[in-house]
Length: 437
Image (cartoon, rainbow, N blue to C red; front, side):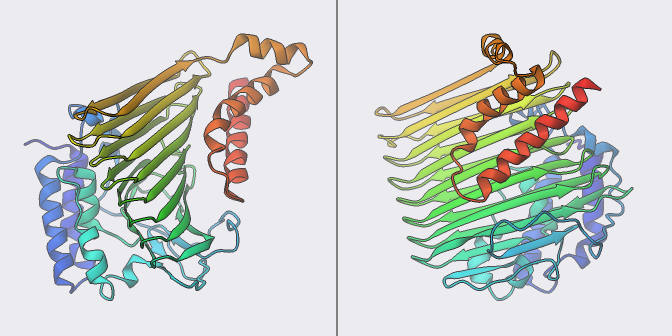
């Protein structure tokens, strides 16, 4: 089978660096890498001929030279202020930086770089590292290279009051780079944890980021997972989350998608027991010629599980967004309640949204719904504000913030909610300056 030039470049790169990848000498990890690279080699990177990738093309990677993947992991980095007083892990160009991190102990919590757990935590993490998602080439590619990442382990009944913070920083540079961290969140029965994960990049950066996060939510546990993506303008960012939720467990996800030339955030959830809950929410902000893709797959595998999805976005310039949401209700999963909504504001004539909500229902007694809308700002609302002396740019900004606020309102915790609102406000100000230029 013919594969793209970028796919061939990644395979060549693997052969060049396989002896230097983390975890050398660990037999099971070597076997995992080989299985993963063989899986990726059969298909290569997905193209628009693959239905799930019909609207998002990775051809930008064909111009990346992966023969070298330099980095500047020791560089000084301008990091945002810490979110609260909790522990913080910082990775710069794929390398953990202890000097920039804040490691604090909490009862019932183990929060470490993945490299620290490859040997000591093999029994716990090996099955999760080995999850390549079946025939999913991006997960297979991540499994082959499998760089450092973070591991969150929360003991049974432990409630971690502090917010855990992870920062992935890309320093940029003239040469393309590839970063492929593998992360894990493991919440024990009856536990609770909140995590915010931020991806930052220098404006001229050409980075291919291909991350994967495996989430296990045990019975009665709650995981609040917040992600902010603001990578450099030349980057290609792909992030895949795979979550398994047991009875009474809750996985509460929010993503703010703003950076990169091409970005895809994919959340795959398996609701495996009664009363399990998935809440998937997101805001996407596009300008210029960006492509921002949000894809969700929620599988209701048993009775009386619940999922809620709300994604809203605003696009200006010639930006394009993609929303693909799939709710699948398996046979026998009676009592399922699954809801999905996608709404987009098009702030210019050239902005575009491709939205494809899907329901696949193989059970009888269910409540499922989906809806998608796209349109411009309400002229009557804009006129109302202008009639009260509010300048047009400010009035437009107020309406956009109110539109997106419905999603952000679901993130009630301090100080994350104001951080998200500030990010939206800054994007609006930049978008208006660009329109006026």
